[in-house]
Length: 240
Ligand code: ADP
Ligand code: MG
Image (cartoon, rainbow, N blue to C red; front, top):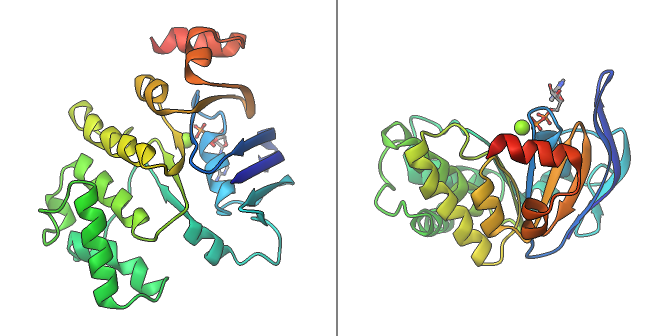
């Protein structure tokens, strides 16, 4: 479980998260929506300890992310994160790219890492691309490779930050299908997305961020069909 308690975070004088309280249960799919600059990406980078926080606490399986005693490298192995774009190593094949962190970070043997990489690449529908170089993949395939790479680390949680935003519209569907598959398999996920239809279909809950505040959180039917927060009402009107 991920527990976020009254988290405040600034960059210099800019207050980016202004007291976020949120719990994500095991197996839950939470999507996060909101305008540009509302603090969505910052929340994800705070959850896996890439960014320090000013105050409050974030606990992952009871371990306080920002406590001095916490082994962040170990904690991050629990939490896969996939961004808009991941720059794969161009001189390594797709398979080798997905093997790399398993060998370096998890100290798996090459044989183990290769088996796991092949398994996860098959899982995301790239079973026929193991031996090709990343530059030969479409944008959608590259994002699925990035997801396979994260999954190969056997995470308990997956964080997705606008993973379809950099894609041509015709490639968005295949990546969303991969996320749907993970959700249906029970993966605990936080997905920052602009894809409202996807958010409605796949989420247990949807959170709306506005200027560093989680202005509303609810089940998708409630949040999309009967939004209470005036800023959310405006946001939804503008995205339709
Ligand atoms: P979102 O993902 O919702 O678009 P972000 O979390 O990326 O928003 O950013 C929230 C605010 O924090 C923005 O105003 C952004 O410019 C600022 N910001 C984000 N990262 C940094 C950083 N590393 N240094 C300074 N300001 C940042
Ligand atoms: Mg962002």
